[in-house]
Length: 128
Image (cartoon, rainbow, N blue to C red; front, side, top):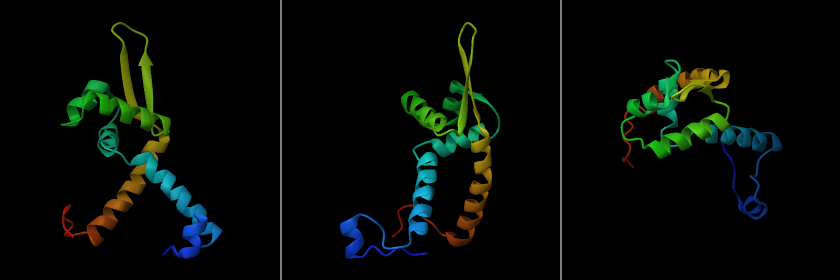
C-alpha cells in the first residue's frame, strides 16, 4: 500500500488517496499512538503475567523513573488498555492489570512478532 504525497496533497493537508484509505490510516495511527511510548511495551508485557503493583512494575523495568512510569500508566489507563484498582486500606494499595482491550493486543503483538522475525532478521538499531 502506498500513499502518494504529491504537491496537491501537501497544499490541502490530505493524502492523495481514497477517503477509505485516509480513514484506515487515521485509525491505524490512533492505535499506534495508544501503544507507543517509552516503556509502554514493557509495562504491557509485565501486566500480561497478571496484576502488578506500582513498585513491582518499577522493579521489573530497569531504568524507568517513578515519574515516567506514572505518566505511562496514566496514558495506558486513559487509552483503555489497563485498569487501575484502588483498594481502600491503610497503607493505600493500587494494582494495575490489562483490560480486555489490552489483552486483545496480544494477537496484534504475535502478528508483529512473526512479521519481524521474517522481514527484519538482521535488524540492527543504528544500521542504515
